[in-house]
Length: 85
Image (cartoon, rainbow, N blue to C red; front, side, top):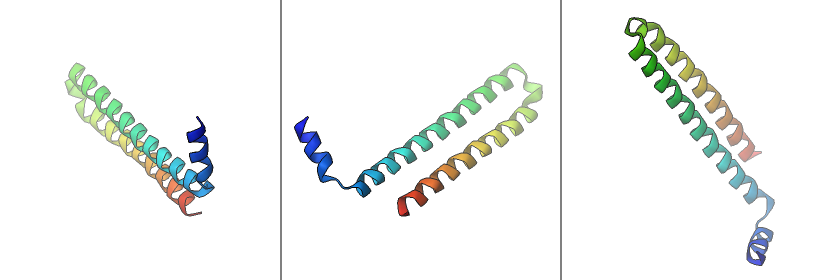
């Protein structure tokens, strides 16, 4: 415990902030990937149940995935801006 305390004291505030930004970016990317994977899974199950509605399901899946990617890119841009401020 003392070693960890000494290590944390040796770090300045900027490096801790950079580490937090890196962790935040990782969380954003993982969450976006998980969300898009769930959309794909649900779309495949829906198409398997109702093949005649595959066009509508596919278009809704693409729109939903695009919205998730947009939110993920926005979060990453905010993290990059926070890195340089």
